[in-house]
Image (cartoon, rainbow, N blue to C red; front, side):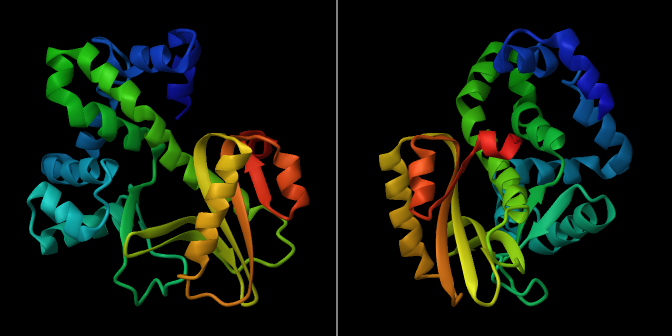
Length: 259
């Protein structure tokens, strides 16, 4: 939203945390009530049910069963609202493991498409009562939880980055894979080639990358894909990145993504 971008120079406080505090957490912060004002108008008098589901998804409850348990709604009711939020309002997106047929699989996860609303539900709406009573406590809690939140967003950015990479083979599908507690952040493949990536929003040393690659090799045995496998890491920064590339490892960091 251009309106939100216009707030940045006015409320900039020298670093990310204090700028977000001025935008969202202070008593008269301009974006503190924004999610409520926008979505309450759109959803009408049934907004609380929609809000409950969006809050649950922002907190990591992403399957229909998890959302049902978290909100206390019946699974059929949750299904109705998920369909509306995905197909009519387009605030949610439906995700399936990248190796599955989207029309046949029951392995479904949901995420909030808009990062502003994802942030607002996770850190503002979820803490609404406490924000009125003790805003400093909410802000300190937010600072502790912000790093993993950014990490999940970085995974989505990494997926889009991989779609534009020259991997020496034509991509058929790119996405996340998961099964029985195992997960690969980005899988890119066609009939004969597979590239697996682990995504980390932190600074990695060479030994960290080696450990991650060993784990990716283990997970490769679990995937139902045949072909030649290549492994990669996408991090905030990577030590000795060129050395890894010389070994055939797909090593990228934030500088590569920005470039």
